[in-house]
Image 1 (cartoon, rainbow, N blue to C red):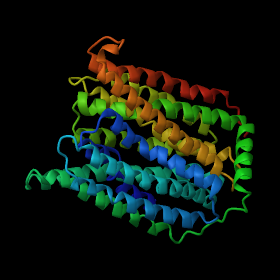
Image 2 (cartoon, rainbow, N blue to C red; image 1 turned 30 degrees about the horizontal axis):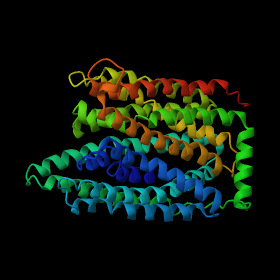
Image 3 (cartoon, one colour; image 1 turned 90 degrees about the horizontal axis):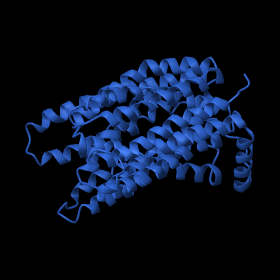
Image 4 (spheres, rainbow, N blue to C red; image 1 turned 120 degrees about the vertical axis):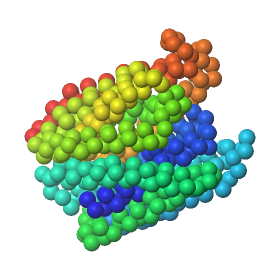
Length: 414
């Protein structure tokens, strides 16, 4: 919990709304905004899959430690994008700088994360995984609720006494502080013992056997189908929803963070419930309910206008159920995998779904850019500008409803 609280304190100041608003200050197009938003999941997927099947070592603790240090080193270079000129026609240069170092950041962090998750699962008894993951998530949520809002209030108070040009540098200071906090998170886990992996087969043989073992497990196939379906249709609107809130609804960062904090407050009790469900062998049920409730957020986005932006409060309340998805999904994945040989299952469940979400996010950004360039091509009623966003939201909503239906086919032996 100490590790998670420190890491989340740093991570909350370098990702999400802080990162998106920082990048939006350079006025990227819908396509380039989607590129920046899909880099994290895509790069983590590529790095983990490559490492997992071709360069995997036995020392997961050491690999996690090296990955975290490298990732944060690359991330600390991102604020230097403010040194580039932002005159007309030159906005792309800082965006490219941010994209390069974000790519390196998440390549290293992807390797660190799955080694960390697999390592912890071997340190805890199987019957207590729900307890482990729920309390770990609640520790991070408590930090995510208070640290971003507290930082933002302090930022606003300090900026009120400084010249206007200081505002663009405030994000750099926040970003650097967050990176240093994330590095401090390694210390609470240094005394925990490593659990070496068993002797591994040759890379190609290992990949073939992993895939065959997973494919022969029907329950795991249906779990992947559900996860990957959700990843595609959630990723499709990753940049669409943010750009809609930023450009159409004119949501300021303060309101955005309040909405996120509201969602995280709801996730605290839901995380505790998720842990109880996992430890009572109801992982699949919790995952199904979480996906279904989260899908209800999309009609709220469709009803949100500049004058009725409060529909987003309901949307973020629905997204509180992602606590069920995250905890029950990871626990269920681990239970369907052989203990001590779960890295491949985690890679396909966590990282391939991230890759799918990233690629669909790029698709969504490209489609939105095309629709905005030719708003008359929209077949929906209403203004062409808003209808372009709504078309992608409706497609995403339909897919999000389909995702949990795959879980109905699972019949798991107790």
